[in-house]
Length: 610
Image (cartoon, rainbow, N blue to C red; front, side):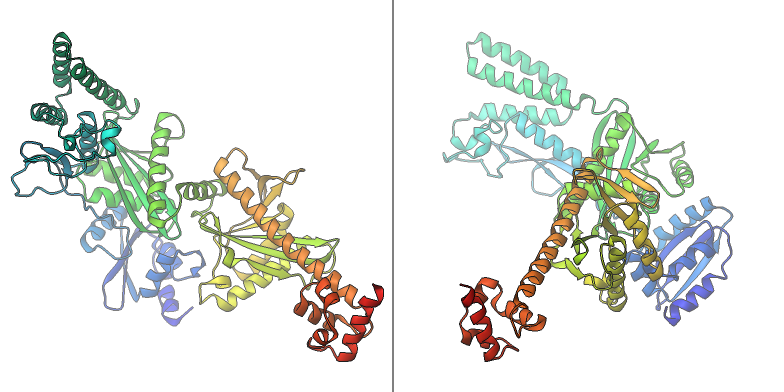
């Protein structure tokens, strides 16, 4: 601990055990973080203690803290209100700040004879017709896309005013999502009528449009224009299908906002789905750095989100715990002027809504991080199952391999973001443990691994990086054998075992108090099974290599004048016993430590046998 951090910790230890707000400042006196606490002394002193339990963002923040102030309040709720006010006023660098970059959205109708309909974010002075503004860009994009498909309007961006040169139509024409203006076969009157109906549809005149289309279809049938009648029929069916799809998304969902978070590495994605009258009318997502526990981040995200909005629903649905949920409810209620409930559903349709929101967050995060949504979901499911504070994006797994206690080795594999990171794999020769003792061998390996961590932790790479989770190939016995090693190094890394059944297949996860069944958790089961299979394969391959070399070495030492050292030198040069047998005396004599006389004995040994 450096002198500055020690001085700050000493100051923090003199704070009162009362609720309040603390204000972190850098050497220039700028406010870089504002937080609230139930007991100021306990909360603030944690920052300046051991950094092992801190996220990367918190470590960076603490490194930049030069001093701090504090304000005592009468209650935790007053601390929350004051914290929100100060954050909005100072916008500190290390707080969760959700930037509201949403402007108004418009529906643009451009062109003269052959008009096109698009969704835009700004209203320009270009002579086009603009419908709006709308607060939800999501709703505008969805509606414009539906209108263009239903009324078969072009979405290719071509300008069709003036003379139309006949050309080869694009794919949308062949999948019946465009009328094919570019073919020159569409009458101006028909196209203009479709645009007019699309605009009415976007303005919400769905019932009137359907009635009008029904009349047009009957009229076309009476006029024996069956091709036109069929097109109008298809348009009617498309509108009805869309209405059925949008009629009720979720019956039990009223006016509410749904919050869910996904995390990977040090990045968190917050997804917000907004509902009214059972329909999803808006969707947003925000990215920020991981700070503390998910419950704390969710509380900060909710207060930050509604600090920049006046429209607060009567229900805020979340996918997990919210730190100080009662105070957050009270703050929202006072801001809205009516009762607001913060709700975490466990089952039923509300739970389905939360699941949908979580999948949105996972997919958005996976896209940003260049990963798959399945990997993000599996790690989050593993986090929840094991009760971890964060999703374990960097996992180390260990296995021991030997033959009746001989040639004992260990393999370490690393999975990053749910996938093998082969350049980080490590192999260990068991040197201190004698015989068939997997517990002691595992303890030796982990001791060596974390000794290397202490020597290289400043680098933050390789052995200098702490894993988010350690998985041992074995049960409670292996976990209990290794736990004292972590305690001796003062490390708080989650430690579990991977248990197999009688058929050597993954069955459960072991912890100090017993086992956690994983077969009912599909994503976790698949991930753990893959890790267990990979670490077993890696350690066994290393053991076989060592065992084979030892066997070859022993066969070579039967030759007069060849000891272990010369045998290893020969194998290193020729790689295989067959190559040594086929080598000439001159080639054998070129081996380091092998004289010509010894080379002749080796050559004679194999050729005499033949």
